[in-house]
Length: 180
Image 1 (cartoon, rainbow, N blue to C red):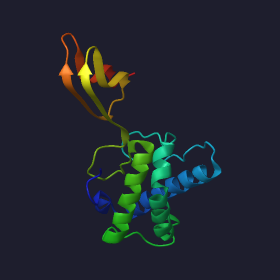
Image 2: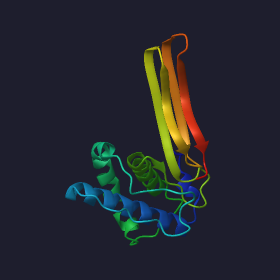
Image 3: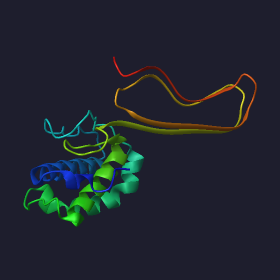
């Protein structure tokens, strides 16, 4: 989860642009869910985010589970999301709501969303994986990938109560990290 209130470090203009972007993304998710169709997520304006993020990917199960909270925050941020009110970084409640909406969008998209000027890891892919087994007789891996994108945040854990001779329990196996 994001460090608390990193959006508060942005300028008023940066916060306003960030809220507008998050509000727009939440609106797109809610429309796609209601219409039950695929859509393309709006891209972030150039220079708004640090790192690379693909907002067209989403987890429908997470979206369905978190929909009520996304809807509530969407409604609470309407004036700022539609640029009808100024965004003040000193307004802790506004920043808290924007941070909460971002955290939900990050869950749905499985990626960090970081705005330029924030002190947190850059936007990008996030992988959290755990592989648990009572007994491993062969091969167990939490993450096995040909390539892991540069800048990806990978947290992997393997647990095995009984590892038989010749068996392997590996948290992350990748032929290449970063590059093409």
